[in-house]
Image (cartoon, one colour):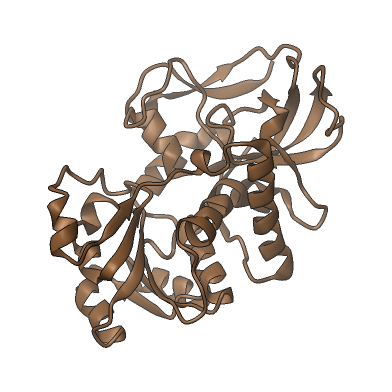
Length: 324
């Protein structure tokens, strides 16, 4: 009988249990997918902990690469044996086998490995909407990226560098600074040793930056706002240190008529067509060599709790994979 990680109540990593599951035939529009590699992301932690409430019980995980074993009625664009991936499943991917809506899947080219495919989708498409849609990074832009050595951060640094931008990034250690620099971050700032606002001011000679990409949340707010030019854009897309506390919106006026947005992947990859276009952009960057997906940590699927603990403690760099 296949197994999966099941969460019956929100809480610490220990609430994730290794359970037998039953998988029926795929419904209309679905396929049955055998997992080859499963991505781990902060949204999985938010769902498991209760920050993002989920119907219980549920299986975490929105990112997976696998092989199709069965095809439901009405599915014409995939067949048994196809290797596919998704980053928009929402949940359900911490499983050896699952049924999934075929509209959430893309075919994986032969030259892209399973681990890369599992790690590129959610994080890669997140970067795509951040730097090609929310704010269109262009040549000569100077941008600030928090958590520059994380999974999204490394992809964002590389992609922005390929577009001709100058990248300033915050990291937590000298090792992470070296990793970020090797992936396109021109100016890594170790935030535990330096005031990142002062460094940004010095690097930009007082001009500051037009956009800040922040997945940290509470720990970098409101200092991130002080890094922005007048009419600059603060993009908050994660809460690694906890949610940003409520604040008076007039602070945005006081600091230079700033703009702020809290985008999410599911509002950009909101149709199969949009999702596949975004995934196509990601695959193009990977196949060109401009972006390399760094899968630096692998755990067995049953060790998902340990993966969550390590990610939350910022012990990891790059992308994390669960192996079924």
